[in-house]
Length: 88
Image (cartoon, one colour):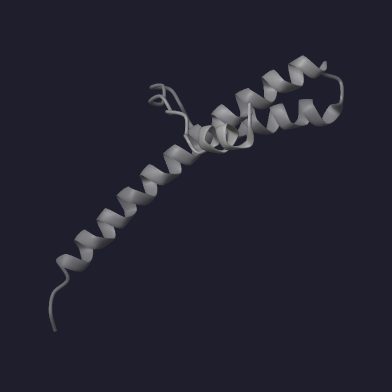
């Protein structure tokens, strides 16, 4: 793979599937913290480190998606509030 192929493929963001019904931000952050602790312990085989890291990245993407959606909702609420503010 040449450098230009690598660059162009790295710009594509993977699609993030919808969050499961029982998904929670706090629970997912706890899973990430557990994975980081396992990796930092040095007790995992290298292949397991890569698997755990990949899982952590998936969880981080879920958290980012969740936070981005909540930020969008807050922005809409604030905009709606500003639109309905009484004029003095």
